[in-house]
Length: 163
Image (tube, rainbow, N blue to C red):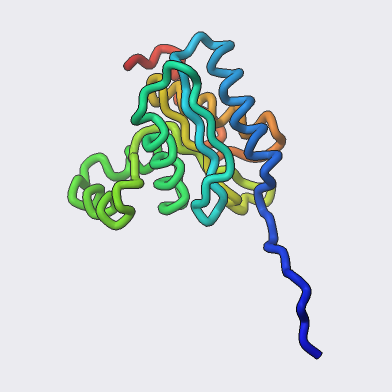
């Protein structure tokens, strides 16, 4: 017998959680006196789920935020870890940038969103202030919705990071 019922895809990162991550990230940035932020949340397939750009955030920030998240998803590690591991491998960084059609930004601010069993269900990318500050907002926003951030903690000196 034919099955004519529409099937729904499994959802690993609900839209409500993605939107809450964006809202928390912006509030955390405002609370800490940061420059205007742009926040992008991608699901594990790299699809944009939630996005906001604060007034005053530059026009490149959307692509940078998404690129931080995209790179983290593509490599399975945070964008800070990508920077740290590939800093002395510019040819590989260039190859990754080419393979991702430029959607690869290897600086802090791209953080993996994980379930409590460490399964990656998405990533958040933030751009607008110093990269370590962007990353702090991403980590804290993920934690605020009860999910696990990778990395779990920001850089030790994130408050002193400057542009």
